Length: 470
Image 1 (tube, rainbow, N blue to C red):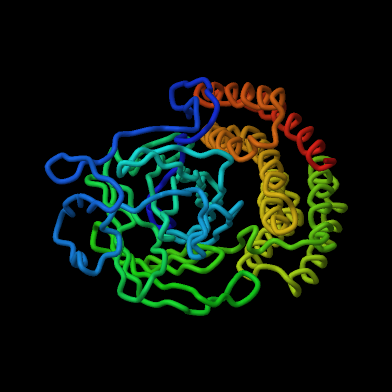
Image 2: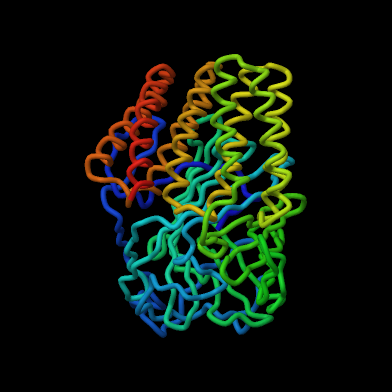
């Protein structure tokens, strides 16, 4: 399971529910949300089932792996209610949306993890297992780097298992590889991602797929109190993860959050906010409302060349942020919001329209991160789609065809998150426009991409209005 340290990444479609046009260099989706693959045989080629030993692929190289008697993942478990994930240290069935922030290679790194509104069926261990689909989207320096669709299910003993991922990497607006993709029962066995009751010294392999991936976790500590987004979190777990190349990575897991913190050398990925764990009932803080309204206003002022008005609006927003950040704001989000507002202020003072336009987009994305605790996840994702259509238009304005194509991929994957709120007619419209975006992106037809993105923005705005009024 790759996270912040691993190389570039970006497009995937293991679990989308609609068929779309496929063009050279574009993404494609499967027609249904289910997939079935053959089970793994046991010794002598005999089928395996619940209670059977899991055939272990040979680990290449000279890795110092743990002996089998320390491992807790050697037997096929039973999956009676696989999508009811109650394990507090990996609560994927309860994670509507999770935001991670950090840095990789000295560049800002950001990931969004979203539980998607459909499942997949995998045949493994003599069982037909329904798995949850979690979408992992990573951005490096503001650009789409990786997208993966991860499959999870919980066994009857409370352990959570990993049934594969469909992953792809992106560079310069194009998919460059899908290395790292695997499916349980086809490429290797399912892997334990979290024991039901982890104890110090327990060892399990989160990936062991020959020629694709290997990761082994040793539980180092349990019941550690961690600093959470807004309050201390008791009951955390510390794991040491061994990689195929021999490198060791520290990982923290927190109840109600799951994977919480990862460090590999100087590269760091840390959980900033998770809903519903960090969700707040009640109205959104007035400071956040003022920030969002100010972003809309300053965008119009920049577009019209009203730099004096834009300067006053930004000053008002910075004052609102100073008051807001002193209250109940997830602490890891504070520096990112502050940086984007400072960049917006500098761009406005310099009267640099392209730079200011980009700063508005960047700052709006961070303000949406503040809003996610107060609004339904689908409303945030609808707003993200609108924002990325604006990003596409900004990239088109400076004639950056590669960036435009990357924006198309981003919109494609964001679409999967909003399926459950679209009416049949809305879904047809969204799918049609995504098709047009894919074709225009593959053809580097920037003008056509801008037209399709503008139409998509109007459709999504109508959906937002309908959903918000419901």
